[in-house]
Length: 186
Image (cartoon, rainbow, N blue to C red; front, side, top):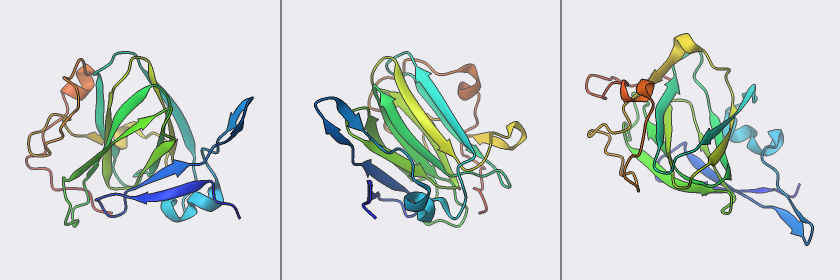
């Protein structure tokens, strides 16, 4: 099979990026965003059950850090379809040597990269351009009773956002700091 993705290692085990391989000509391009066979190893045998799209209008806006507790923990494949974001995953696995470590990378409509965020990680991002649009593939449906989050400005986590934070939702501003947070059991 001709793989349509290159798998890129990150500094956190279990967290990988994908580089998509668009096929194009003068008319435009075709780009595979998902293939069950190729992504199965990264999804832990689970299937995609929900697809979401977000639009973030304001440059500098931050969303997150969000996750879901078991039994609704999820793996997400995050791709940027328009604009650009600084996408962040934070390791929340209780037994991980990288507990509370974060990885950030730019996802954009031009760089053909996606981030595969496994169970046990929180996700957030900062819009680097106005009207940035993300596509999320989820292995678990949204479960409001299982949602969790941490403050994206938590000094213990120490995410270095590339821009001044222009806005966050009231819900995200109310998320707790990580002090006292014991992590997620996977």
